Length: 79
Image (tube, rainbow, N blue to C red; front, side, top):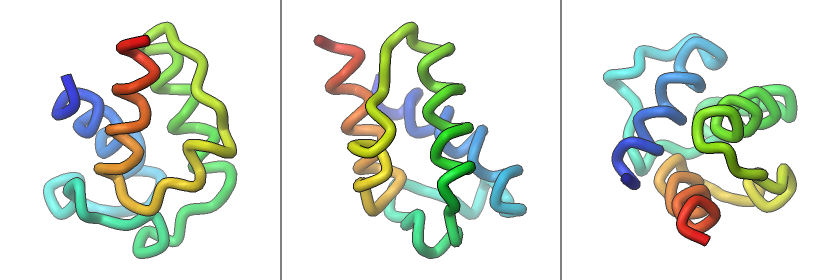
């Protein structure tokens, strides 16, 4: 399930950041991608729709890597 969530974050984030999805992985940082608030918002909205779960924006935004973000979403989905 974690890998699926990570894949969804990459699927949604890559076009926002103008990055090749194949070049992104769990160790990629949001800082490297120069992520803006609007990017976090679009990713969390996408994940909320995919997994029918509410993702607190500020908590998600505090995650440094895509992998940390996937772990966080997994915790919410499993609650």
